[in-house]
Image 1: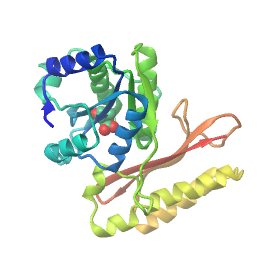
Image 2: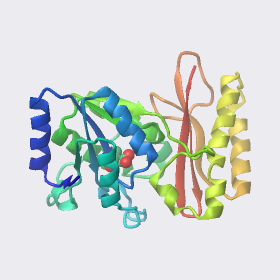
Image 3: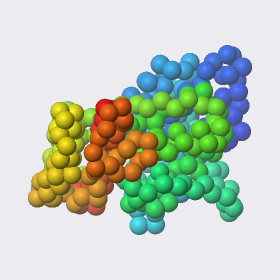
Image 4: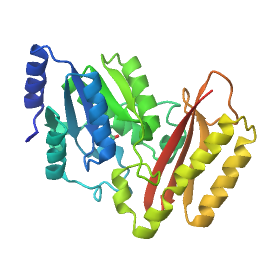
Length: 282
Ligand code: PAF
């Protein structure tokens, strides 16, 4: 399987699939594909006749001090996986194709990026919206699948689709985990053996607090403080560990019935940033 590099060529491919009456599912990725991505491909295949993947490490969503240079790039291996999964085409453009010259326009996000990853990574979601907006305009898929692990990304993209009238249905793929509970992520490759052993601790904390909330606990802040202390004692550096409203992505102190919440955390083990979350529906 060959990667399609040009916008014209991927458009032609999509057009011919659509002319054959096929519906198009789309899974945008930054490559270094693991079981988590493959589960998104499989989910997309349930919702559409043909699935197109993109592989592009988007420079606009990395701050200057982040891991853009180190981010794993494994295109040849990724293409093998895409072929094995029955992906119909892979769009893997270069930077000069995605960003031709100076960009005069940008997309701003309000409120929804104030906390969680948006709070810690200024410009992150603006960069994601920019690239996904471009990709949606190029591929024009019927459905697009994004993982729950990046739940704030999903929520903000939902808003983009609504406000910018993209004719696409977003589908959220559940988090794929290793046997010990660690959420699969391309960045897990940065962990050394000791950090890898510790890493599922984040999920265990989220699970513990999530269960308490479902069982009716009201002292959520105290529970979270306790888990933060425990994680710190084990060697994690906490970026955030909190309960957020799914709608507003803002922290909440407590839950109310008939609402949807995200119990989410971001931590560092050494230089590696790990994120994870559980959805809580009341
Ligand atoms: O979730 C990701 O891998 C990226 O943020 C995405 C959606 C491919 C945009 O670069």
